[in-house]
Length: 313
Image 1 (cartoon, one colour):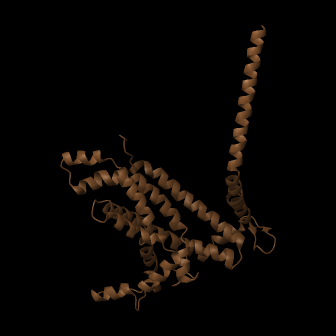
Image 2 (cartoon, one colour):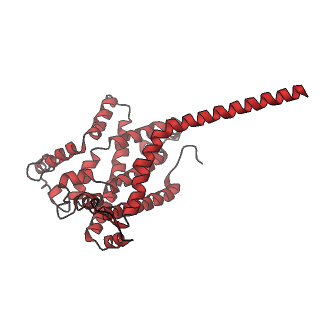
């Protein structure tokens, strides 16, 4: 009996030591994660729930907020500038996202070819994405100037009269799209990673079957690249719907010509920091959140029909 009691005591002590060690490890883990947890609560959770509350109030930062319920939302739906900003943003996204995918995939496939100076060419195409947005804005304002810009000068050399670009309501948003297509370095990098992840076995099997490069592109490369295309599409839509810096820098926040470049985020910013209507701007932010979520859910639901993964039947 004494031997059995001794064994039981040893096991109890070992169990206590294990529990104590697990507790210390858990505490150490929480301690190391504490800076991130504090940052999450202070810079994400608090602003999120604050904006939800302020969207239901009349708040101008200076004076205390006044509860008004859903009045900000009802006012927004009768605000012409709200609808104009939403329309401009959606029109821009419908142009920019498909073109960015098309150009990004094409350039990535070209940069994936085993040619001399491949590394240098990849660097050249990535460099524009490192430039500050303001520097890019100044550069393109000069290039697209209808009087002395290089783009219209080149078009004139080949017998084409260039448009007014940023000064023309018809061409203002296409001009903005052209500027963004110049800085596709990050998405090209992701497409290149996706291309190099495609197994060469598929291409070898296609060569045996006598497939040409066009058939291999549309029956192997593009289908197996769809997971990467899908990721860049989601990120591109989110970014396009929140486009702010470039149009704001181009128009100094006015959205001209004729408010054709008044984007949703610009109008939100103006309400929050120019007109000091923080509650109104918070309501706009939540509407944008809902729009982004709905579009993302639709894309996620549709992905099962056109996104293919290696190894799937």
